[in-house]
Length: 123
Image (cartoon, rainbow, N blue to C red; front, top):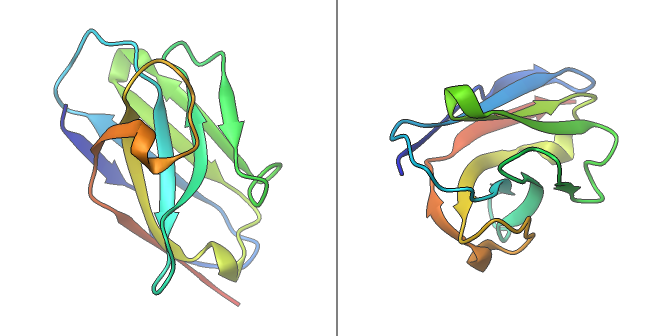
């Protein structure tokens, strides 16, 4: 597994960004994939996760109704569409592959991590 996250940038409050997480090494696993974020001085927190088939999703309360996670299995890519962005969404965003197929919300439930992509939301 080799994860590549991209799509971060600088956006004004109320704007949108779409993050992508691609596994460049195709695998036959059915593991869930999640997004986490970490702001300076804060702990890494769960954002969203999706099952391999895409039929099970979970979101942090802080992003429900604004963020949408999806995946394109043919492209080995998971997306995080972020709308109505707020300054408090500013953080480095990380994607990760879970230990198993379950959609989990805790960091220790994930085995492989990509590098972060920075999202900055200005007020």
